[in-house]
Length: 123
Image (cartoon, rainbow, N blue to C red; front, top):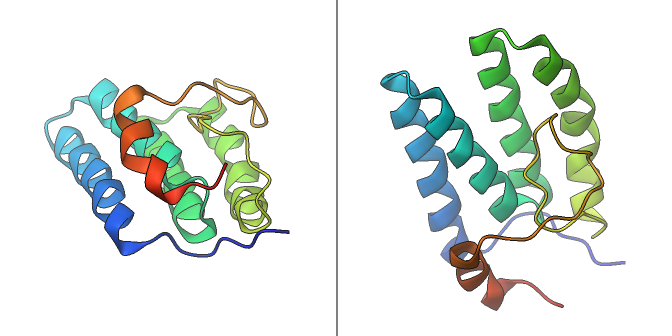
């Protein structure tokens, strides 16, 4: 069993940058761009329990903001279970974290994120 609690600070910079971009786009009501950066933060944070859980928290807050009940309902179990799955190293790599994709479906990681994450992910 591989326990993953918090991400390395060198990678945390990229995770925080995605969350900051999401905040900025939300301020200007650029909802699609905001969501895209929340998904990217989720992909980066997914292997680590704290960041994975926080990604789902931010997605849930966004869903409430736009009043998307399907996303709200989809985020609740992800918020509860996601961090636990990260902690034990059982995640669907690359999953974007939204209710529009099955929670256990692996997905292709965007090339730029692969480069950022490669030094920190054990194959």
